[in-house]
Length: 223
Image 1 (tube, one colour):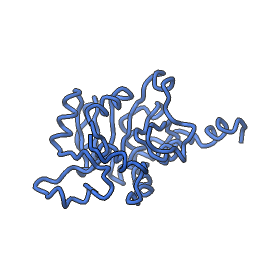
Image 2 (cartoon, rainbow, N blue to C red; image 1 turned 90 degrees about the vertical axis):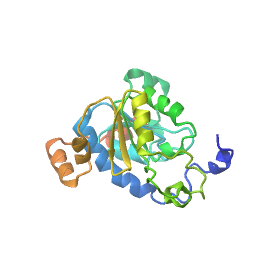
Image 3 (cartoon, rainbow, N blue to C red; image 1 turned 90 degrees about the horizontal axis):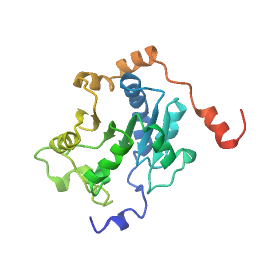
Image 4 (cartoon, rainbow, N blue to C red; image 1 turned 45 degrees about the vertical axis):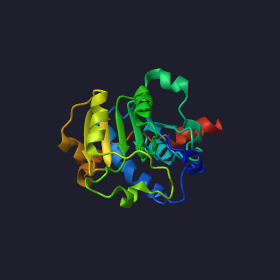
C-alpha cells in the first residue's frame, strides 16, 4: 500500500476536485436512462464511495431508491440514507455505481469483491490510460493529491470483468459497465445519446420523486 495515503486522505475530497458538482449534474440524467433502459427502476441502488451524498440525493429526488456507501467522507446531502447491514441483507441492490472511485483503490480486486457483495452490476467511471502515453505527464495521475493510485488500461478492466464472469462495456474510455447482462455495445452507447435520453424519458417516466417521502421520514411529519 502506498505509504503516503494517510496524508493524501487528510481530506477525503481534495481542493483540486473542482469538477465534483458538474460531474454529478452530468451523470444523473445518464444514470436514470441507464436504469430505465436496463434495470428495474423500482429496485434499490447503491452509490459506492458516494462522497458527500450529492448523487444519492439527486437520484432520490428523481424517484430512484438510492443509498450511499462511503467510509471515508462525511455525508452532507443524504445523511439518512447510508447503507447498513440490515439494508444490505434485505435483497441486495439492482445496480452499484462508483464514479471516480476505482483510481483511488490500493487493492482493486479486494475492493471489487466488496462491491460485488452488494450487486453483480457495477456502473462506474475512471479514465483509461492512453496507449503510448507518458504516465508522468498524464493529467489524470494528479500527483499533487497522491490519491490516484490505481490506473487502468482497457485490457486490465476486461481482465477484472472476466475474472468474475462479467461482461464489460465501455463508452468514451470513461464510463464502464460490469454486468451479467448480455447487451450490445450499441445499446450501451445509446444511453449517452441525448436524443435517445429524450425518447426513453418520454416512453418511461421516472418513478415519483422521493423528496416529500424522505422529508416525512426524517422529520416525522407530513407535508
